Image 1 (spheres, rainbow, N blue to C red):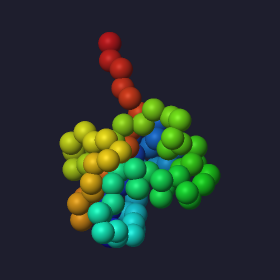
Image 2 (cartoon, rainbow, N blue to C red):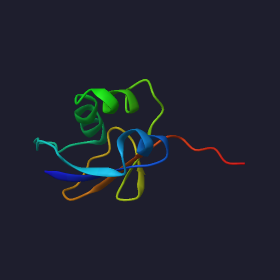
Image 3 (cartoon, rainbow, N blue to C red):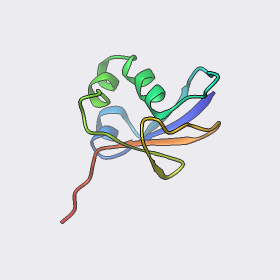
Image 4 (cartoon, helix red, strand yellow):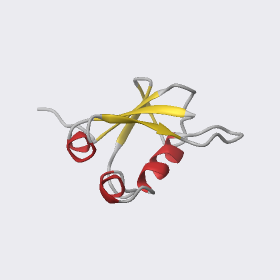
Length: 86
């Protein structure tokens, strides 16, 4: 299944604006955690920017999502750091 991934703020600086990612289909379907682990497994900048110890937020089709959120086919998934305003 192909997923469009977008990165924002410091993640965009580290990884670029975005990319298309092919993720294997499972009976339960992919989740945000599955996608993040797939990207981390690439190593390098992906492993550093998306590491499990780092605070990273996610949205699926522009709705805030958690690790267990399923990703539907042809979805857009965005990763971004927590943002504070002032």
